[in-house]
Image 1: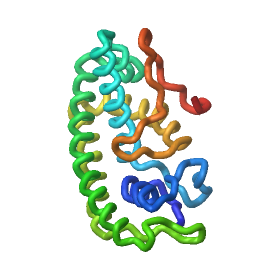
Image 2: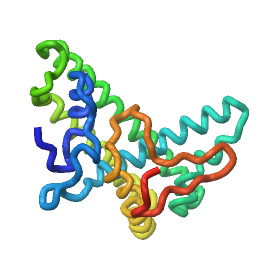
Image 3: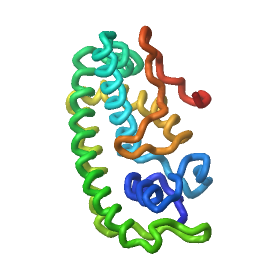
Image 4: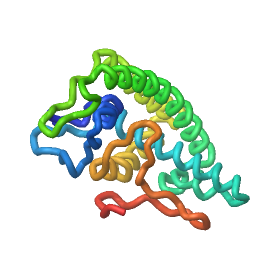
Length: 213
């Protein structure tokens, strides 16, 4: 199966490959090819952003359970994107709501994938086999998934106002998008390798064009 665009079915294809015993695609496996890989869709950029924020919130809650300060995790994007307290709160709320809604779609997709796995011969791929085409229902779920993320982005635009949103979009394009091009696009619930703060200090995101960590 050729993967020539960033607008591949992010959850469906990754989980189908995992369910059938193959490893997920990564940037190293299938790097963008000149003339075939288009720019990253906004839904991909913002999904990685929102998922990173969800991971940071989880880390903050875990730190607080240990009696430590969770604020360094929650302030990563406020500091790096130079947001006000109000803007950071709106971003956090919109991100959390989007992640919850998208994960509902992903649970629906997972049920479909498990059914497809059960119907697959041998339940795994042979060395010369190609992954099966994803079930048609997954295309609908993917469209709905992307629409939820795009709607959350528009909610953020309305909350920030056009001028501040344009500035924030520059942050996403310059600091978030380059890390996605170097890494596997994570499905919901997958651990992220984007930077997290240590327990005592705020750790900034890597500069655009920087090396892998």
